[in-house]
Image (tube, rainbow, N blue to C red; front, side):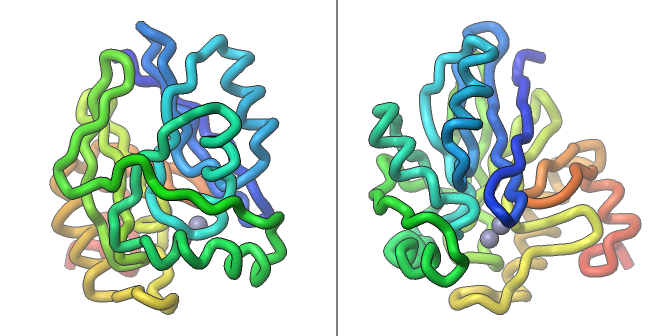
Amino acid sequence: MSLRYLTLPVTPFAQNCSLLWCDQTQEAALVDPGGELPRLLAAVAERGLKLQAIWLTHAHIDHAGGAGQLAREQGLPIIGPHRGDQFWIDGLPQQSAMFGFPPAEGFTPTRWLEDGDTLSLGRETLTVRHCPGHTPGHVVFHSASARRCFVGDVLFAGSIGRTDFPGGNHAELIASITQRLWPMGDDTVFIPGHGPESSFGAERRSNPFVRDR
Ligand SMILES: [Zn+2]
Ligand SMILES: [Zn+2]
């Protein structure tokens, strides 16, 4: 297994930014750099990693607020999310003001993601699944070899993502979880956008929103 990761909660929302890297090549990506960029870059530098890209699960401010500045300053591509989140990217300035975040720099993703796309990181390959419901363009990043999935705000330990924002859809979110996440396997550990890790099996047993009936 050569995929490693470190979770760094950032912003007043304690959003779990993940630093992912291949321990054979030291190539790294930051998933959802919502803010606190100096801290994130220090974590990269401490480990001697070569930062290659920014990957976004969705375009809410706590996940994507630092992406534009980080991409510009470090010359990095922004990969994702799915095109369905364009309106959230366009709305980042309003999101910053509404939630009291520092003004977010606008950006256009270098590459939009589609369901089934693959992303390589050194010798590792992760699969993209489109999981709408919390936002229309939400994606997750799955490493079958490491049995890990970076799920953003789709699923949490004991809960699920909010669906009361514009473009949210409860039925779609439930379908994303049960039809796209569960098949990855009960022993797959997921890293949510907020709070502690859990496994899909544990959520299928005990999560009141999506447990097996
Ligand atoms: Zn969100
Ligand atoms: Zn969030």
